[in-house]
Length: 243
Image 1: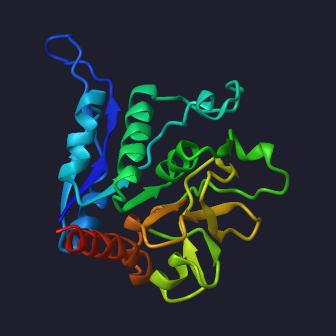
Image 2 (image 1 turned 135 degrees about the horizontal axis):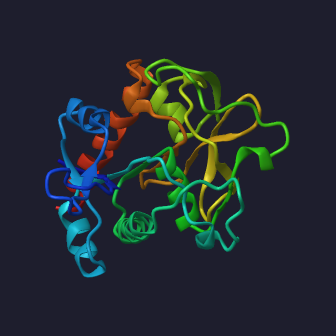
């Protein structure tokens, strides 16, 4: 199984030569989480639009990773307000097109943190540009190591996520300042924080489409690692059915 993981773009300068030396990066935890399931992680840098359909055709599943940037508000028809963070339009354009191509062929996909947000927006949903816009929101940017949890979650009974975790409550880490405001078409809420912030979304039905607002790859608890195991299982099932 080949599972693609989207990469961040980081502008760098070659210190010795003084020329641009941009790099593609992703935290190792994503690749390790995929590899533990027996699948092979493949890092996906942004590519031209003409490459996306062939790329999706080679993959068995997709992880849309998070990053230290925000989805451009223009994608959900809003002006950028002061508390919105930096944007990375090149990566966001690529991820949106990748999600659209993946959905068209029922590619199993998992959106993580910012990846959940771009998944929601791609399906027509909107975001709070900062949690200060949402009355009653608590703190969702933990100061401590994200290998440790921050707050509890309530999982929707009967949801795909609850079935994966084998329970309806979890402790999750938290590193975000934005959140889902309105759900994208065909999505439903599968987890919330105590303050009501949406922490997971999913598409009902046979296709594996799941977004989580936290970073399960950074948490060692089995119920979080089970999310990546479920993604690989969905990829194996799809491959069997399409052969």
